[in-house]
Image (cartoon, rainbow, N blue to C red; front, side, top):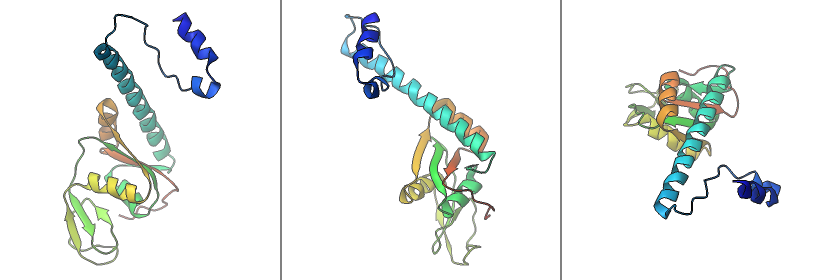
Length: 171
């Protein structure tokens, strides 16, 4: 381990900051075991990152800089205010989309209350929300494991960090 610390101290600072873990230098470790260790570290880092993002989302929702829940998040997407959409894996809901203004909502309405045009069925609003976020050049993160479960409990499996505050809910 001392050799790893010394090696890291010789790296340029930019590169040294990118070291995220060290594996014990067991010469008997075969490729399959090494890969298993690396994947475990990767999954832990991913879950930790998702938990931090969820914490940021919940804190920001309290001050109007994020949404949680399907209705407010779909409103923010329609207003093109989403900077980052977060979705729990396995979360699904059906709804409708306006054929004219593109508004999506978790309802079975046949007419858009915003523009009065026909609505068409949407099998999975979560998937459609991801597509809209991508079209709007917003980041999309799909949470797994405990972070997904926490997002499901706190916000119905969806939320968004916003580019700007959306002052009044549209629905």
